[in-house]
Amino acid sequence: MTPVETDDRGLLLTCPQCGQRNRLRFDRLGRAFRCGKCQVTLRLPGEPIDATSDLIFDALTSRSELPVLVDFWAPWCGPCKVLAPEIRKIAAEGAGQWVVAKVNTEESPTLARKFRITAIPTMVLFKGGLEVARQAGAMPAPAIRKFLEPWLGDRK
Image (tube, rainbow, N blue to C red):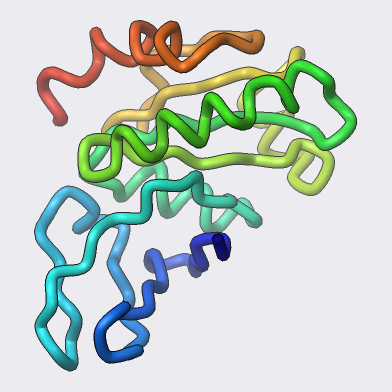
């Protein structure tokens, strides 16, 4: 599986039918999306998005119509490795209802400082550009779902 490509305007998706590269803007993540060439419906990727820069992170969390669950992690962190497959399950399950992003705190220390990440893994839920919930520590997918539940009813 290839990672989802991003830029500061949205997700870059390749149409599985015709191969056309399409941009799904962050502000349209909750809407139906069709390939610009063949018009086949494109689905949101059911995998975490790597927020590889402050610009991409800010654009995603501030413009997304969908809630954005961000996993702040580091490659050397044992609990982060335990959480990774659970986060992938949540991303697959929530495609179209929420977006899951990952921030490597070793590669993006400014984001870790900005959001006062003092322990990893830490999951932060953003809605309408604002942090609405936070949870530190590794947990199984059902517990992550329970953490998200209160915030999913009304998307705005």
